[in-house]
Length: 45
Image (cartoon, rainbow, N blue to C red; front, side, top):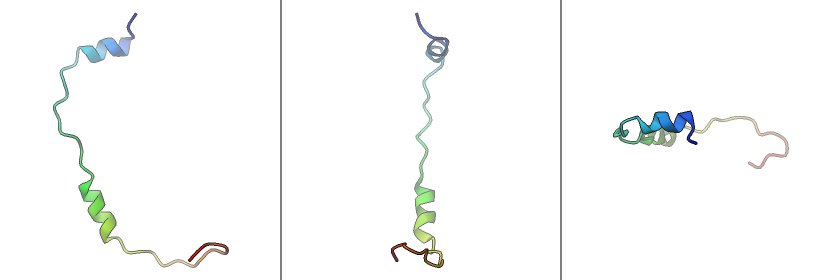
């Protein structure tokens, strides 16, 4: 017995879209400046 989801997916055409890229986010993270904040007691500097 197959599930309803499996039957629905079997009827869909293949997905030919390219995989999403996270390169833009990597670029944002590299340019981000560290935030100056007071140290919490017991936290390593």
